[in-house]
Every structure is written in structure tokens, then in C-alpha cells.
Image 1: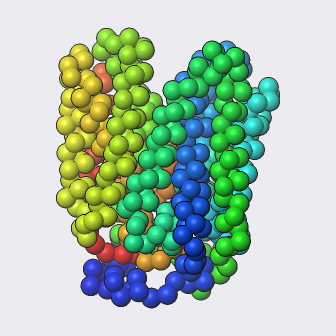
Image 2: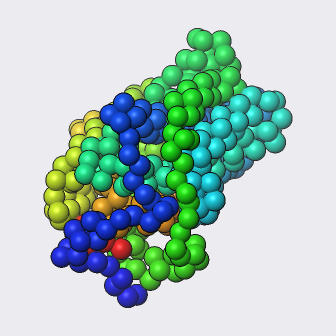
Length: 415
């Protein structure tokens, strides 16, 4: 693949050039910028709860629908597949409707998808899940675009804030979904549907941004833009780094409690360990982008994150539960930090907001398609070997590749 990148010597010159009509920065008052930040953070808060709420409620869903385990697995995999397919196509929406209207439509679609899962038919359950997956894919791709366009000099801060909000939303939903269903008396359907309130609030807060609609015009075709990114080694490094981070994250999310229970922890203790890893992940997404944005070269930070993940994997490979809270804290922080790093790479390695949308779409498409197969492959290796060690060796191999592409993505260049 050819190296279609701009070196560090040309970055400042390129950044000083005016954006295309699609990506033109919008002049806002201080209040309007604060309202924009609030809208971005609220949208980010909505990008995980409708997904994270499913896992804790899966036994209730099985009892209420008589779905098989394979169909329940599809219920959790379907949004990831939607992410993978829709992410690449997001620039088509923004070119026709603009960034602001596309995000507003995504919040409408998210609210609709969440509420459709209230209906008793299984078909509505899957349709609603598909729709919310499409909506979240649009939000995933476009938030880095907003950062690139409106906060080019504060990209680390805004990235850390909104990626942390994503983690907080996931942790909060995972923690209170069962209490809402049981102690709250809502049942599993209305427990999942309750998150529509949050998405409706985000939609209302975002409403003022519609008057700032970008033109959506572009000087190059969508296919030409995708072909250009496909020939860029840097774009592939960013995309694969995002993908392998997502692979490891969803494996840990799906299998950590099961692994710890097999080592002797009670189910409740294993659940708290997963919660601990998610909380540490929020800390990682908050701190790492702030640190990385202050550096022209992020390769050292990538190496530190990989080392932390390697130590935690080695600790989790040990039999028993020796220092298990340390290992889950380390892996949570490393994966959270890697996620924040991946989102910041999209901003730092793109020359303008249009390119950020395209790179974000490519990266997240590859990322979530890889993530969709991670938990299944990890579990398959265990089924064949009956030993978690071999499954962890898969993650160790993934980690080596992540180090390689991460060091490439960390160099100060742009696509």
C-alpha cells in the first residue's frame, strides 16, 4: 500500500487552510459553544446504555421470549454488525443532510428503536435492536467529526470528555437495569425502554444545532474518498488499531465474569469485578486523550497502554484469583485508554472534518466487524481446549498486532 500521508512538516500548513464547504467551522457565541458541548456529551451518553442493558437482563429476556442462546447471542451481535456496515456509509448521510441533521435523525431513530422493544413480539425486539444499532453507528462516527471541526485546539479535552460519557452510560445501564426491572417493578421490557427518556433529552438539547446545518457539499465523490483512504497505510493503521481495541474490549465484556467464576469467585463477585474494570475504563478514556493531545508523537503512550494490557493478561492467565482486582483494573484502564486513543487518532490524523468523517467511518466499520467475532472466537477456543489459557493466548497475539499498528498510527502524520 502506498503511503498517502502528510508528514509532520506539512501538518501545520494543511491545518491553516480553509475547510471545504462540508467541513466549514461555524462561528458561535460562548453560550452556543457550551450548548454544543452539552449536546455532544449527551449524545455520547446515549451511545451505550441500550446495548449495556441487555447483558444483565438476558435471563429475563430468555424467560419472556423463549429465545435460544444462539438467538440471544444474535440480539447482542446485531448492533455490532450494524455498526460495521453503517459506519462506512455515514458520509453519504452527511453529504445529503449535513452533520447536524444526521445526528438529530440518529437520536430520533435511537429513541424509536429503544421504544419498539417494548412490544411483545420478538420481531419488534430485533427490529428495534437493529434500528438503535444504526443510530448508534451514526453517532459513533460523527462525534469525532464535530471535535475536528469545532474544537481543533481542544481535541484532547473534548475527546476525553465524550468518550468518558460513553463509558459512564454503559456502566450506569449495566448497574441499574436489573434493579429497574425487579425492585422498580418495570419488568425487563420497560427497563430497557426507559433509556428512551435519555435519548429524547439529548434530541431536545441538540435541536438548536439544526440552524447551523453544514452544506454537505464536497469536491470529491464518496467512492473516490473511500478509495483514497483504502490506499493509505496510515488510515489502515488507525482502523486496525480501533478494531483490535474493540475486539479485546468485547471479549472481556462478554467473558470476564465467566472466567472469574470458573476460578472460584461467586457470580456477584465476578459481576463486581466486571464493574470495576468498566469504571477503570472510564478513567482511562478520561486521562489518556488529555495526555496524548499534548504530545506530537503518541507512540510512547501506545507502548505504555500495551504494556499495561500485557501485564493484566498475564495476571488473568494465573490460576486462582490472586490479585484479581489489580488485573481487572489494569485491563479496564488499558482498554479504556486505548479506546480514547483510537478516537483521538481519528481527529489528529485527519486533515479536516470531512476527512475525519471518512476516517471515522472506515475505522469504526472495521473495528466493530472485528469486535462482532471476538467473543465467539474466544469462546470457541475454550470449547475446543477446555482451558482459558489458549483463549488468552489469542488476546496476547492480538496485542502484538495492536502494538505494531499503534506505533504506526502514533507517528505525527495525517492522511
